[in-house]
Image (cartoon, rainbow, N blue to C red):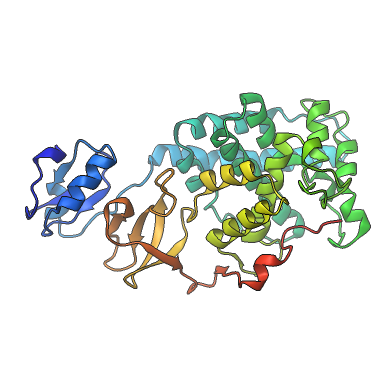
Length: 370
């Protein structure tokens, strides 16, 4: 029990919470600040892990349920295959259905209701096979948009029907772009939502409302989007959310192979700023921040003491205090809720992400406005 801990007490073994997250390493003193933090967070039971401390080599903690992660990774490949089959059938002029896509999206939805963090950890961090074509990059973007939109919709407390629609439409909204070579500056590119509506006309499982939303995904709340320059009042809530998610993925995962994406923390700050000026729906941006977290799982970060680490688990609404695994000492994990350390900034040393300069925050970096 946390109440049995005493200020100044030196622990002979590691102190962990009920999920196995390290609270305090063996040999370090218990402090009043630690006891207060445990109480504030509602952590009433802790335990001394003698097996971890007595082993010659520290074993890595498992931040999420491995069985759930494995199932979610399986679903990632399922929805990718389902979308691929859907595209082939639609382009071939065959009758097709969103049934399998909907089945996987519903599975994501049920898991997200229980633990949205594990959904994004298992799916957004998957690199998959090397991207060999524009269509493959577009397909991966669409799958991730489906997953992220489903999770964000749960944070926004959308109805189950709208949560499912967010996931399904996120996967199929760019259906008209497959096989095309349009530049984003071409007039034909800006009209692809119209062609998507037409392609989905007789698709089983796609309602008239869903087709309307497909046509609105690239509209902006201030009327600067495309193809019809609609403003917020005329946009469905699901389309406003999908517009935000699409912009976020455009920033962090550019379609161009080899081009580094924007650091997720900068991308979210950028969307918040443009939401304040009316480009994006503010509530939907808040939902995305709650879902994606400021430092998503897998993000390399630099702590305020100069230590490099990797984010391995989110801490819900405590966006700036995830659980991290230090690069050195190897495999040491720290829950930043209970630590004096904090994240200073994203770690740019691996070249995966780039930071946004102040001037770039004023530029339109998502897909082009009409």
